[in-house]
Amino acid sequence: MTFYGWIVKKHLKTMAPVGDLARDMKDDDTFPRRAGYEKIRSYLEWDCKACSDCLDAFEKAWAEYERERG
Image 1 (cartoon, rainbow, N blue to C red):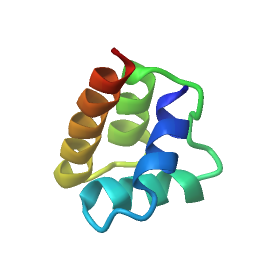
Image 2: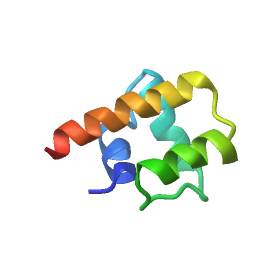
Image 3: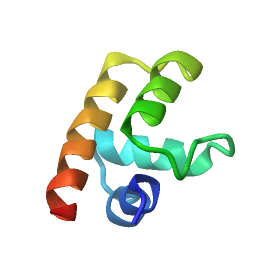
């Protein structure tokens, strides 16, 4: 499962920064939905000019995603 699929499935209704990120990703038609860590991080940081809270939420979510993938 891609990170995009995972975060939308797991965190779309979460009322925390990771939920905000999931909702923003879902609503963004240009989000790189099949990309890996580097491409997504770059997209958030440079294309979206994401704030540090958003980038922190992404880092924590990515770590959780990796743990669950095994």
